[in-house]
Length: 128
Image (cartoon, rainbow, N blue to C red; front, top):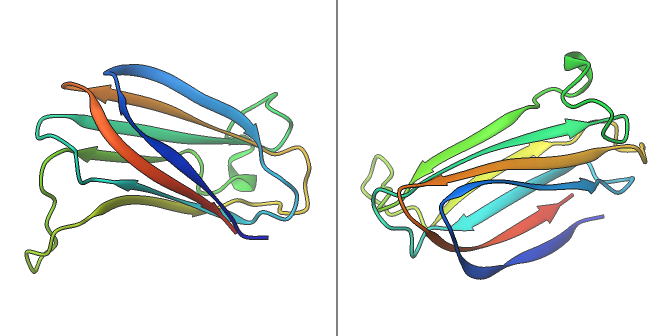
């Protein structure tokens, strides 16, 4: 049951925000979030932590053995990001499985912090 959602191009102000929680549909077994780095400015940092609940949001990341690898995170700084061969990374990607694919009580949320200025980006969230 793969699906994609395009996160609109926009400029996101510095600060901290919670995105979600959102219900994870039954049958979804993982996700990939790809953020376009094309307009990221040097000195701007994004930090994101993704939490999972298997009890409709009553608890998050608990019990740990049931929600591995959550919480999980991403940290990236603006400016050019190059691989070991000097090739530019066009995207920053966070991907992970989502356990208990038959469950209808899963919720997911992200805690997002942008520092050093505004972040201009677009993204694609793909579920599998």
